[in-house]
Amino acid sequence: MSVETPRRPAPSGFLRADLHSHTQSSHDCASRPSDIIANCLKRKVTCLAVTDHNVIGAAHEIAANAPFQVIIGEEIYSTEGEIIGLFLTEQIPSRLSPEETVHRIRSQGGVVIVPHPFDRLRGSRLRPQTLLRLAGQFDAIEVDNSRVHFLADRLKAMIFAQTHGLPTTGGSDAHHPSELGSSLTIMPGFSGQDEFMDSLRRARTLAGYASFLVHF
Image (tube, rainbow, N blue to C red):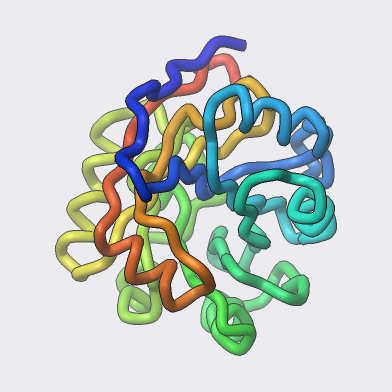
């Protein structure tokens, strides 16, 4: 599986953060935590958000063993599409309303991110009417996801973020270790949720693409 990996080094004091990734705990992924750690080191990923589908156990395992910064996250399937929660302490169940999903992320002091909001190939994306209804409750919009292959879909996400004054993120959405770091968020170092949001407002994204074959 080939990917285009952004190779530009981060400025001093900045992190090469991949803010969307999966492990074998996700139903559609077979990546072992040990392989994820090894490939992050190889690709100079210095911060990783582990965002498995509807579970957080592997994120804790990677956080306990990785020599780099790890964010405990979850990609949660709400009744109207997927929402990412970062800095979670407890797993959030799937199939809740998007309002309840956002509430449960916030009740843990977490950060709410909308993944791949306009990806035409992704049936799991948040519905357009939901995006508009909850725009004021989001913390950030994912604009660079390596598995979003149409530039127009990424541009729609950027326009939505700009229209609503929201920071943007980049992440690989890796379901295979070789994809890790293929899209990144270059952001100042942080400690905790509040500093994360401050850093995100000063961040930029580096865009890469996974092989189109990942969809098959």
